[in-house]
Image (cartoon, rainbow, N blue to C red; front, side, top):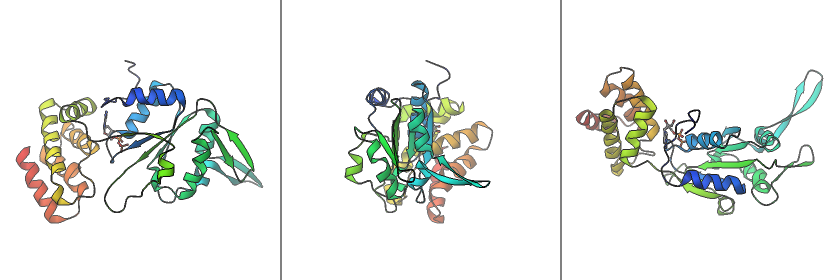
Length: 259
Ligand code: ADP
């Protein structure tokens, strides 16, 4: 394997699927909770395919202007500046719209003509249509949280993508990821994964999001750099999950027993 590639542990058939999606330039939607390796997977694939990757983290203020471009004032002149989507289309890059459902609705409208056979972008402020470079590919991620506060994606938008679900990897693989990412020893990695499994099963806590692989990686990094184990788990795993003092105490007790 090319040592230059970012580290990514394949979970299912996602690498193969992405390669074929890329060959056919079919937009790709990655579904799953935060910290399950979606961004890492896209970085890995872009690198493997030797393509430039442009990532946009969407939030509720992200508008089509942010992606397509705008006029800016430079000295006495007003000049047009391409946004990241327009740049990706012209250069043949892979664009990754992380958390696409968070963006304003006009973003979804703007990408429609890019997600079907037209593969073109209409830039209304310039009154022109730009054809996508043949290497251009659109990738987006979406967190289908069943909890309140997560935005939905309309079926008419979803059906413009092929989709793969990301979840927490099985225990053995997750421990391997921790070892590879942080250099922690495998018995410690297993303990961290056991803690995560336990907390993930405590659905009665009503956590908006549970322990992600990202949190475990952070805990492992702290432990590896010499912070005491219990403190590492408290600050990297327990505290980010909730602000409820009783739940924090209960989770701390549970983790202390397991580490
Ligand atoms: P997401 O984009 O789903 O929120 P990330 O891709 O940022 O999640 O993953 C968070 C971290 O978890 C990564 O930085 C990496 O350390 C680790 N990780 C999760 N899944 C994997 C995997 N399959 N292979 C390698 N690292 C992973």
